Length: 206
Image (cartoon, rainbow, N blue to C red; front, side, top):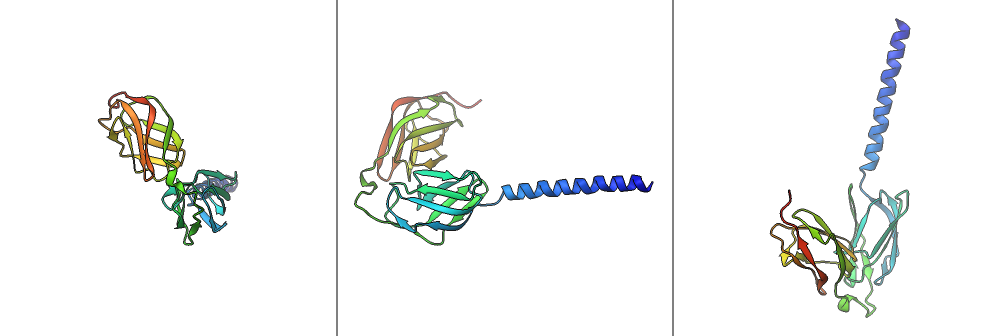
């Protein structure tokens, strides 16, 4: 009887340990990004900024309201490098790092120096989008350049309600209700872009 109780107790203990370890792993995976330090503190358009911290996996980075032109994260998620997008406004900018588990916002501003080569002439340009035909609720990936700070996206003249700009070269937009076949267009503070070919609206979602 004593041996049976000991064996049962061991099973309970092992089960509890397994649950604790699983819970710990889940907790670690749900932690928001954190930054210990970043450098440099100032730069120009295209400058690389390196962040040291934790939980950077899948991160998106913005300087002010404009996405970084590129983001690279180390395999262990402790180092992140981001290049300042050319659409970023000159002057002090708040940095934001966003992952699926949370958001980190800098208390110290990153200063973008005006070199005279700002984004004033960097109008957006659409080179492609996929899929070419989609229905309401489908996601369409638009590729091109200078998408930072996009004001709106339209399919056949109908404004998209939901879209995100992971980088200055890509927009992911959800096809809106009552969309029409026609050109895809993107508006930023620097100008307007239209797709070289037409989008085909496939109708309502089923």
